[in-house]
Image (cartoon, rainbow, N blue to C red):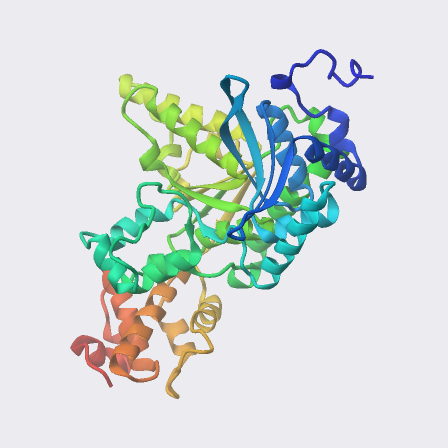
Amino acid sequence: MLRRHDVWGRTAHHKQFPRAVFRLPRHRLARFLNRLFATDGTASVAGGGSARLAYCSVSEQLARDVQHALTRFGIRTKLRERSVKHRSERRRAFEVEVVDAPSQLKFCDEIGILGQEMAVLRAHAKGAFEQHQFTLDVVPAEVWDDIDKAKGDLPWAEISRRCGRPASHDWHVGRRGPVRRETVAQLAEVLDDDQLRWWASPDIGWDDLVLPERPLTVLRSLTAFLRHRDLVLDEWGFGRRSGRAQGLVAMFAGDSGTGKTLAARVLAAELGLELFRIDLATVVSKWLGETEKNLDRVFAAAQGANAVLFFDEADAVFGRRSDVQDSHDRYANLQTAYLLQRMERHDGPVLLATNMRGNVDDAFLRRMDAVVEFPFPTSEFRLRLWELLLPPEAPRGADVDLGFLAERFELSGGGIRNAAIAAAVLAASEGVAIGMGQLVRGVAMEYAKHGRLTLAADFERFHELVRSGGSP
């Protein structure tokens, strides 16, 4: 039987799941995982109240198989490399850790580990879940780039003082890992930065996407595929003839501010995964071989964290292929080809965003599993965006006319959001409710950012107010 399942003769470093395991029904897969964790798993609650639930192996493939199987139960995990002591030496090992209280609770209820530790862990996870004190309520490490921009030259000691913390408070700047959501929210307020407020905003869902039915349907189908791919590809056997990895590569195309990044966040939130937002300009290097190394690190990090990869401004790399005239052109084309190959070998979801679909080579588009179009919002959808982006708890003046704003000002969803926030800041500084005076000035500020003129024909009775910058 061991030979039939290709297990016979494998050393500890080369263990992996037999293919038959991926076809097991849910209750038998749970029992299989239960026995694995009983031998090499860890379940504990430290004195400080932090819970740990993990599986460790010297076989990287076995650790990845465990992570893959846990995903079928909706359990969020992270894969990390460790150095463990073995007799008189240290060996490399791979640890799969269950990362938050809801996932720990789900593991306890559906899989479990034999022993008293499981009962203690379950009680702790249940308490943390009920109090919403999750082990991992964090924002991805990419937030540090925006923290640096918002901070500027302001010393960390001054930021600590503004936050009511000791000047010596450790913000873990050197570690540059994921940051707790409430920490980002606090930094957003003391630094008065809208981009950090965006990072710190709570989890989102389909109701936050204001799009026509067609792109919404495609996005929901992508989510359904990623949620059920293990069943379809492994248990139902469709993966045996695909000839490629079991991931998904999709391109989001549309003007800036039309909802591409928000859609990526919704997709990741629906799947219970982290979102790794990557600026391709920071990955591509002029030095031979460095781009490939950078990409390998990006994909390895996403694989280990079980995350959605989101490449922004993808047209910078996937533009129409140039004729090879010199070594620079040849190297650029090689980089693009390598990124395509790396995406197609990746087992997880990869999303790419472009503001200019017309600049993307058709040959690359054919390699995508899906292309989702994000149209510029019509007045109907702009009205829905204004209604969504002005929170009900915000004080609103009786003169607010959202229909006028939606009909008159052609703004994207991102532009409407920026204008609404600018209007709220103006109202707060003036000590009044948000009225049309503040809203049209918010629109004018957004127009100015993009070099658009504030014409009297657009602003009508508010034109003089916008020109003077005063309040009504």
